[in-house]
Length: 139
Image (tube, rainbow, N blue to C red; front, side, top):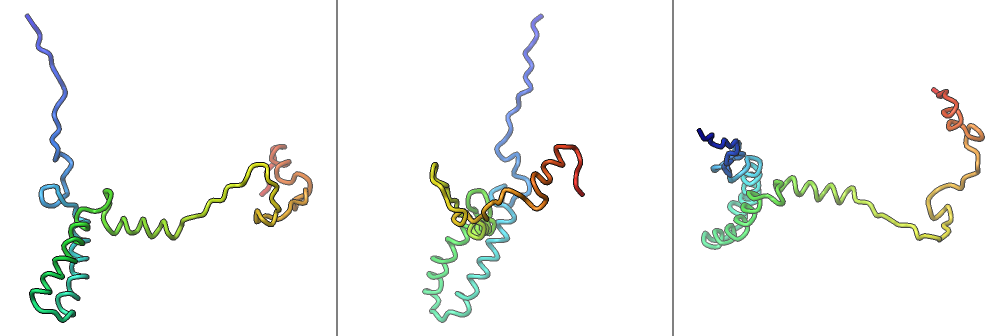
């Protein structure tokens, strides 16, 4: 008698992890909420406050609100639009300039932003380092 080969490999459908999304897994709830918020925030002034005729108003709203809505629904680089803008703001606030020292060049202590070392610290020669080596800690 021949034994049939048994395989534990199953095909996983593409929409397996799309639970919790809107429109059949196409839109994340956070992106949908952000899109509605942006459309209300930008659409109200265009609809109510700017004096234009009906045809011009429709054209202006189509040109301005449609791209904003599409970008907000899709998100940028896997993040929602506001989360991406938060990353940009955080980067701008926390960025640093890195300065590399030249090899072989003798910098003055003032250029390095440090005080000149006198060879002794507050506790005298060695201080905490000697005590830690001896096994006693300072409290």
